[in-house]
Image (tube, rainbow, N blue to C red; front, side, top):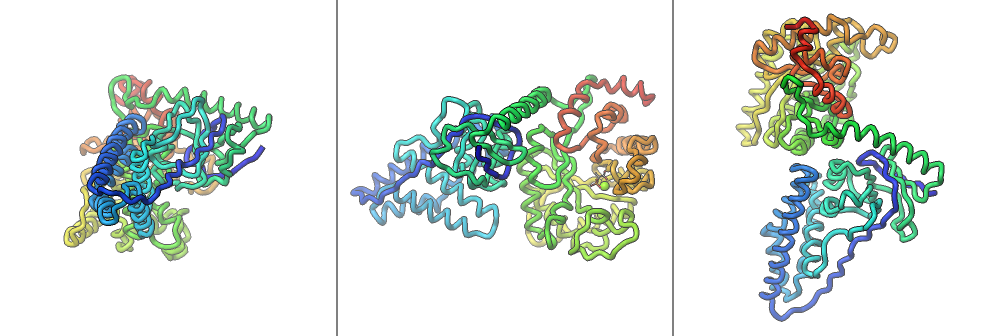
Length: 550
Ligand code: PEP
Ligand code: MG
């Protein structure tokens, strides 16, 4: 038995024969031709066929993996229509009197190199796309079918790398998993794999030799490894694990695609909490209706210096675009307390949880706040972004935030930079915000209750202190009453109220929350389907009667 390690882009276990996929090396020869006009016509015909193939791939991807992920094939169509690309090919044919294959291959190489040398990550990633479209046209010119030969039994595909077009052409019924030597976790191919729920590994140190072709393999997407020729013990252990995973999945899968609607017709927004864009796979996989809390401070925590406006903009934009119009609520940085960043150069504090954290940093160091707001406002032109401010305690803070937001918008306008009009809400996670919720509700578009901090500050219990775990009780009636008050005040002002603290995923309280009138629940992606199950089984009217909330 051999074991090879890679990076997992999607979990799960796959067991089956390995099929080594070798790229169809398209050997292109430079051939002198007599009639460049005829050759250009041959190129145009091939391009037309490639466009039709891409349109079909787009439709297939649209059905299987959704609009956001299918968009890559629209991008490929646009690239194939690009004037510079086409002019370069036709010029080479015309000026050098050479065959279309040679002109396409050299233009493809030149453009790919040009993209690869760009600074912007997004543009650099387009290099693979130019190669992909050029190979497609070459396949058509050579009368070959682009893409992989179909296998007859379900297999684990092992390849050097896979282009997005190759991934989407995989017949899901015949592909158990794919494992590649190269590729990036952020590539469209990885995104497609996650969305298709195929266990997949990239950057795997597996040799692409005929020796492993046809051998039994086990891909363990949880631990990021592939076993080739597994021994009996490993095989039976993995079969058992696979069976258990399958049973759990099947039970919940039936709830995918269902609306979060109670028996008596109340619709609930059921969203996911994320810490960075890598979590999006799980969001899509678990059928979240949006993102209810993007803890943006993780972008700061994983760096040595402040993330720039541009870096933040790219990340927020990617998240918004991947969610394809679904709501994405991004919380401004909640640095402080346990989330410390050296480069913020904060003074040491006696009580950091009650110290300079979150909005307090933003209001005292507006240059940091403004950089993030600029990125958020710009990114909101590319999707359905809302901004949420943490640790609010007063109406005055919201007024000050509004002044800073107005300055940011004014500056963007003067600089001619495009931006959207995101909704703006606040977290209710301090007792002060609860008590002021009637006034605060008139100032903002929504409330999201942060039960982790609300419990800490209401019960005067440090949430980081493990010795106090037995006292830290988010079910405490004081916390639940506060939540009730927040929801009522939100509704009186005509705005919605949700929960994004851990309590939102507590299925023992889901019915109670619905009875309170909570409109949104946001939680780690894996909790979405179990909570959806309870929503579907709840009659809110009866629940309100049971809780004396009529
Ligand atoms: C909360 O306090 O409930 C919350 C969601 O914020 P965090 O856990 O990030 O402090
Ligand atoms: Mg909090």
